[in-house]
Image 1: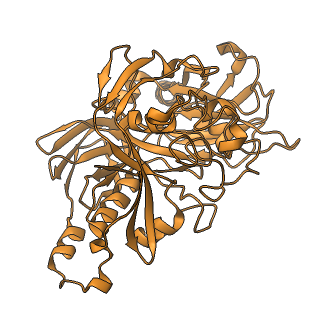
Image 2: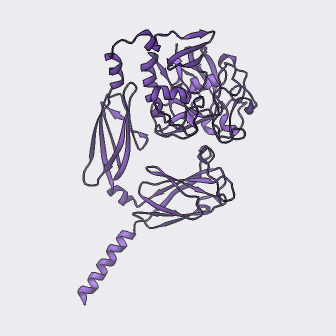
Image 3: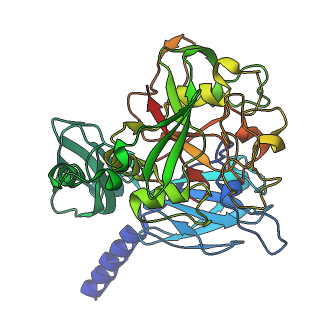
Length: 462
């Protein structure tokens, strides 16, 4: 009898230990600068746009219960749950923890609002998390490459990057200008650390250097750019060219200047920026025809040769630019955030508009009130003071910079933060409201992120 009782006690203790693992809410709050609910909307049964709750959790989520518009969108450690406005609760079921009911009012949110994005951060038992961590070491060549794990940059030294992560599956990307990027998945086990050896290939450059010299008819790179005043047109191939506008060097005030209505904290403080070199910037956003000519694919959701390319990540843009430079013999790149804003404001010809080229957004931009929930042909609205199109609206445009907070100090040729987890993009989009289309508005996301409202514009230094 005592043996039976002891067995029952031990069994109960084991069960209690398993089910003692509980989830807790670290935070739940509105993300006012996150436009996911607007740029990637989903309707509820009453035809209103849903709210989006981004659930951040390191672990396996099995399901959500409550007033949900399925399916939910799952990334590595982030899940997007679409919920109708006025919803007040969400139940979460995971693999290793007890189910959790989150009542939004407990965290200062009475009910969800349409078109708003919220972030819910969950944590499990800290001891369990510690037991489930493991080290990942990535050795890479060339040593100047950028390493991202789960879309976050891992700082490396001498070709070695190391990080500690929860056990389970994780994504990685190793990228470098002039090389083919490499990406994949790695599964960390609790029993031992994991090691990866990544050597990037420079095959594209090798191919260019070893092929026989093309004839003039085969080699568009020898064609001189066509110059017309401050405009140049650079041949690529298949009859496709890149039209660019010269931006004269100068000094301007960057950030939430007085004409910018409803600025947010990320646009402050204003600061003086001096760009000491002239540069050329794309007259238009990169089109699908240009992307197709260079990459031999078209990732865009809205199809059309003269529509801006979208659904391209920052990493995708680096690969595109590398191949474009090989074809043309030029050195194209993404604009710095300062170069982008200076050009959007009209450079030395600026008239102090809130949007790029006008104070009337409909004149210069495709946005939520006039786009019909889709992109439009580049250059079909009015240009700004420099003759550049669509720097407000149509699609967001990636910049080269890591995202960082502004300083009030004057700067010369700034290139953004030295490191970070998110790259900047600018300009608003077809699904955005008026305030995100202002020339000072800034947004950012992980370099591996892409969606149907995010593209690019090129810059060429003189």
